[in-house]
Amino acid sequence: MEEFVADLIKSEDDELLFNEIMTRYGQDILQLVYSYVRNKQLAEDLTQDIFVKCYKALHTYKQNAKLKTWLYKIAANHCKDYLRSWYFRKVMVSEKMAEMTGSSSENVEQAVLEQEEEQTLANAVLKLPMKYREVIYLFYFEDMSLKEIESVLGVNQNTVKSRLKRAKVLLREELEGFEDGQ
Image 1 (tube, helix red, strand yellow):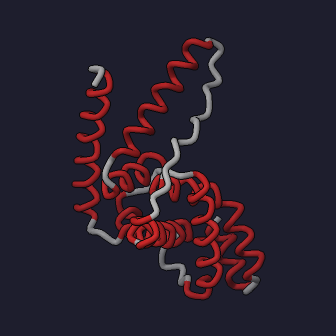
Image 2 (image 1 turned 135 degrees about the vertical axis):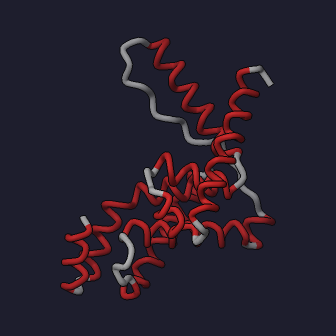
Image 3 (image 1 turned 30 degrees about the vertical axis):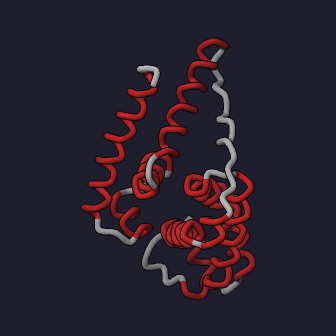
């Protein structure tokens, strides 16, 4: 992928490059944005804004980092800016988390249990404070390395490790509380 992108950048065909970026990373960026805002419609709107921002900034991409890391950094910063905005703080819109995709298990009862567990885990992750939620999402759901997360979030790698460790503790406590019927 990175070689293909490098070739497209050299060809200076911004439209083709942008279409390729949207095709390859559109869903990933949407999921990342949703992890920040927890609202499907809002996540779709912000994702469009992010891709407009990326298109306008394509000429600034220097290939020092992976394209995916560059895009995630833009997306994470855009989401944080939105969450700090007056509009978000004053006009809060809430929506239940989108229904998780079902299991392909033959056993219907097992599929229902698996879906409930996934829903419980997703809800627990979404309840975490932002600084913990984002590291959990990037590490486990996007399979990013600590170094990539450091680059995306703009924090020291040791800070990423600390937040990841604390997030696991908070998740464990939340999930144990759920099992105990709290």
